[in-house]
Amino acid sequence: MSARLWELFGRRGRGVLVTLRRDGRPQLSNVDYLAEPGLIRSSTTAGRAKVRNLLRDPRASFHVTTPDGGAYAVAEGTVTFSPPAAAEDDATVEELVEVYREIRGEHPDWADYRAAMVADGRLVLRLTVDRVYGWRP
Image 1: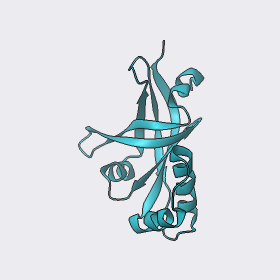
Image 2 (image 1 turned 90 degrees about the horizontal axis):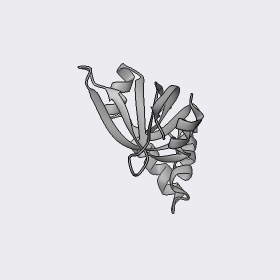
Image 3 (image 1 turned 90 degrees about the vertical axis):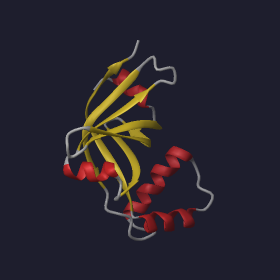
Image 4 (image 1 turned 60 degrees about the vertical axis):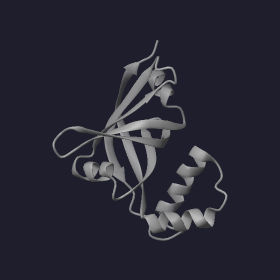
């Protein structure tokens, strides 16, 4: 994995997750993410097209670019999911709190956030990165 290209992901940001539809065409989703070398995490819900696509075929690509479009990186790998949030203190909700906190900072009402994660049946999407390619001058 190219460390120089991986730097374009930063610790957090917004990127484009690419999954495969049943007919083979790409489905793209803008997502906020948290990254560390070899892993990209995001919050989602079970009913989303990206989740249905990834449960059928866990291969995914994740694209980021610089604000001026002068460089880009794509991470390729496979996705796994946490179990759906089922209780306000379960492991999934704890990981969702961590992801939120690292992306956005402190939430004004963590109890409300935790309850919403359970009500939504939120999951953590985890892209394990096998390969990074792109262009950076």
